[in-house]
Image 1 (cartoon, rainbow, N blue to C red):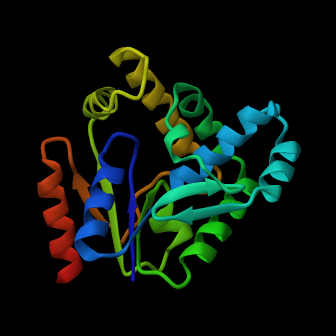
Image 2: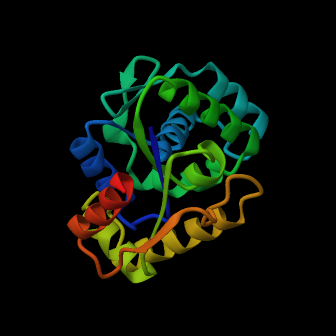
Length: 210
């Protein structure tokens, strides 16, 4: 079974997907982690983020795995390094490179071939798993998105700076030539702005069991 969730940053996708994975005893997969992991590796290697050819060559050489819902690159668990301000600032740019998206999508499909999963990202319902049994699009107002990210305490930026960063990132994500952030026609749309995490989980689980 594949449960696919899309939506912008700060709409609660990761938290909600993790809770549902626990409740249903299935694997949680965060597609954004793959792009963040590659971005982290590129930054560490000092590769020019404008040089798409070099980025693709670098990504193809990486041994990427997903163990216990944590990203492992070349044998190193990098999960705790994926949400720095530096990685945040460059992930949307890196993830907009079309050949790189193909590499990541293949890796995700390969890793999840024999698993029941709940996955979340920007194009899970439209590109990566268009045939998923259950599709959801979570949304939230920009103010709520920024406040949630701010409260996570992983950023050194002010609330206004976080809001501006999310606005820019959502713009890039919605304008991508491939894998753009959009609502799949057959996805259930949920505005999470005024809902608690528990309420959103309840709605999704009810839909899955129907």
